[in-house]
Image (cartoon, rainbow, N blue to C red; front, top):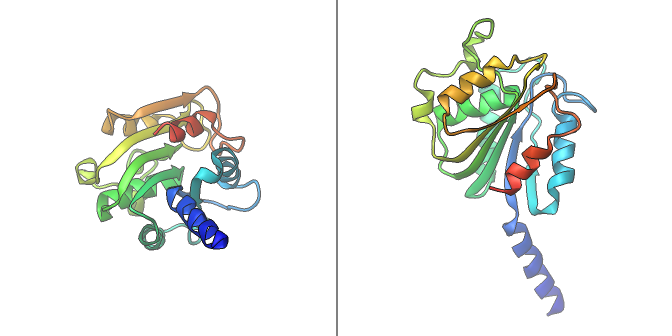
Length: 197
């Protein structure tokens, strides 16, 4: 009987965990590359109260939206009814495109975009990642949107954040006086924002 109680307790603990789907950046995702260190930081700081999913996206050094979309579809199907979404760099762009074109019937508590490029503006016209003109109106309901970007980001210029901020006037914007893009040592305010949802 005691073992049965433990099993029930463990099962309840698992269902109480908040689920997070993290979509990583483009480029190599080896040790200390891409989003790898940021994910390690999130796991460490968020602890056991969160179920952090970090799927390896197809061919990250030569990414294609259709391939990434199919994997996100599968991940979404495996998640519960309520979740948190985090997109780092290309991952953020892909999440916005996915949500605006595929929709989502789940409760999205928060969407966190870290150093996400806004495709379609000058020098960033990669057709398969460009958002539809009415993408904001097509988005499902999202509890809160957070934007994070370094003022001197050496990979994705800061003005990309301005485009997202213009489209999402209610978003909470976090800018950093740095040139960081990978945020290998983490983002403490991101942890606070997630926990305060």
